[in-house]
Length: 143
Figure 1 (tube, helix red, strand yellow):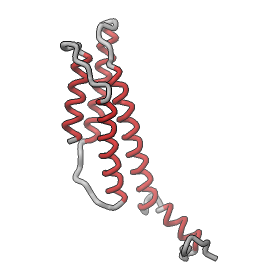
Figure 2 (figure 1 turned 45 degrees about the vertical axis):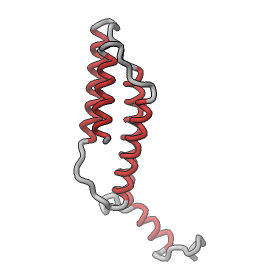
Figure 3 (figure 1 turned 60 degrees about the horizontal axis):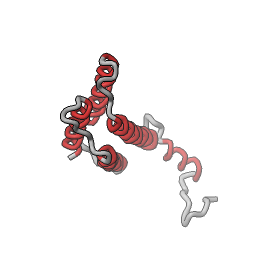
Figure 4 (figure 1 turned 30 degrees about the vertical axis):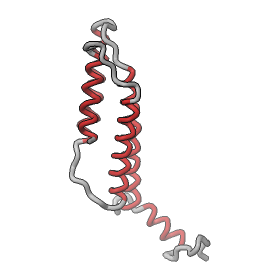
């Protein structure tokens, strides 16, 4: 579903940029795309924390594709002296993508630091030393 939405959204953005018959990306489409992307990132992140493994996805491919297309649009805008202008919907979409991707990376790094031996299992280390292997019961501090 996300791949289809991404492909359609990107194609519509390119069509708007190319001024094909005055096509314009609907104003709410970038927000809808952001919500769908956010759901995907939350699901993938929660599965990581629950130790549910996914098959390898091509999310970075789409991230790179958006940025390559945007860079090409900026170059075309520059060389045509503004005859073609990067659509506002492209900028709004890129902001949403960066927010979702950043959240995903923060969750992945936190998971690594909390659970891995290489990351020293910071939370496990803290709890072990804080409570001397005797975690509190009913919210009270261990003595």
